[in-house]
Image 1: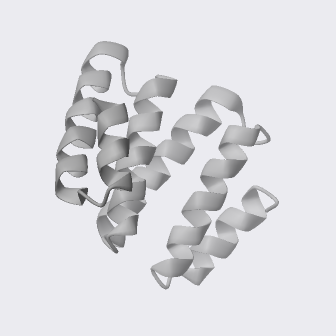
Image 2: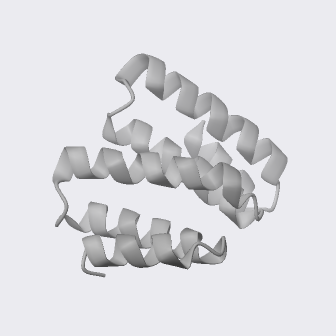
Image 3: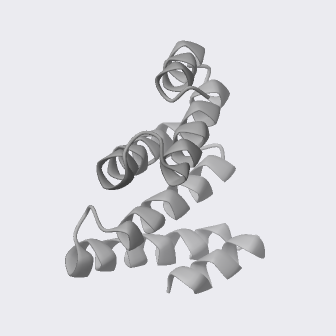
Length: 110
């Protein structure tokens, strides 16, 4: 389901992709738990889609959740965590929240 959503997103079928990402996330949360790496991938995918559409207020809590999950799983210096932190900082900046973006960059030495 997640892979199909990714394909639909790439083809510009964003409403269909969003519905599938949401279903994939709900299924992964139920089956794997909120902190599982696959669940966090679904969180990121949905956040990315929402950000692509300019729906930053909806995307930001998901990016924040994904970063918190990466920190818990891998620690602050891991590559996955740093990628997640960079993504969050970029979306904060796009949303006009430069102070928050800078705080993330400082925390993770980006």
